Image (cartoon, rainbow, N blue to C red; front, top):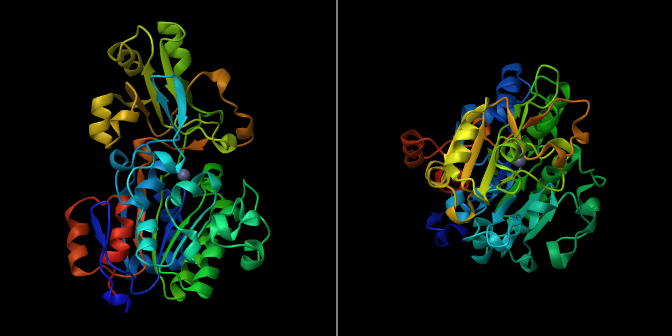
Length: 420
Ligand SMILES: [Zn+2]
């Protein structure tokens, strides 16, 4: 029966009905550097097997290289210019208010998950942090056996809201802490349990980057984390799923020789030059959980809210050390495929080892004490793994060879490109 179902059209891409379960995993902060190291050591044998027997490239993620824009790209199969989520915040120029972009109401277009569910597929969406859950679950009807929850609130799930209850008992793990590797492991353990018990058609499992923010690839805790992930990926494949792995963004060390954040306080610099109120710097990485990055990233937006012109702002920022690119709105939208109505007058992207903040007084860096700042947001963190557990069919071999792949093509490749 399943093979006779029609193609599912989502935002202009036609997706084939899965012949067997497809599990797409977003390894949050999964910089290719981690895989390089652990593959060389031989410590992640399942991923290694996928890469040699299936398919693997390094793909381009969505810019800015933050969590929400990339998760939305992956589940809609579109760039940020289409889905509209270009960070956690943008400035409403009419009201002067910073608008949170992590809710489903600002997401444009349909999600692959919701459209498959509408077509009758059984769909599972699990994420580590609850901030992402509602966006991932946009229009996903959980009353028909579909499931959508976060491990953050695993203990509070209800049939009405999440399509599942008693999740801690079901998974057999205690409630994981917000800043823990177990928060990600729980996502995978829950996915495995659901695959065993309910045999869903489509699973989207989105982890958290707590580990990558805290530990470099050479640190033992990073290896411990990845070895657990690797075992889970092997178990998903053993249960008969096609496993597709990608990441929302990479991660770079952005600290100086003294171990302190290598940060440019852009709002302070612009205030000193133009006066307070003339410009407004928005750090779109900001969220409620700044403990592991202090709201410092490699990409910020500057709105001109007074007399300073974009040209003047750009000329000041271009004179600073550590900037990779300083773009006006039009160029930023064209080069990075961003939604113009949510873009600033000036976009500033730092080099790999540098991060950008707003006003120093407004950043809480307490959570960073005792370890180096590792963070993301720039072009240097926009390279991500793109791995399938099974080989590609001929059509998709050609497609893969013809252009650099985007991470938002992962569902396309998993559903349409995997040899069945
Ligand atoms: Zn992330």
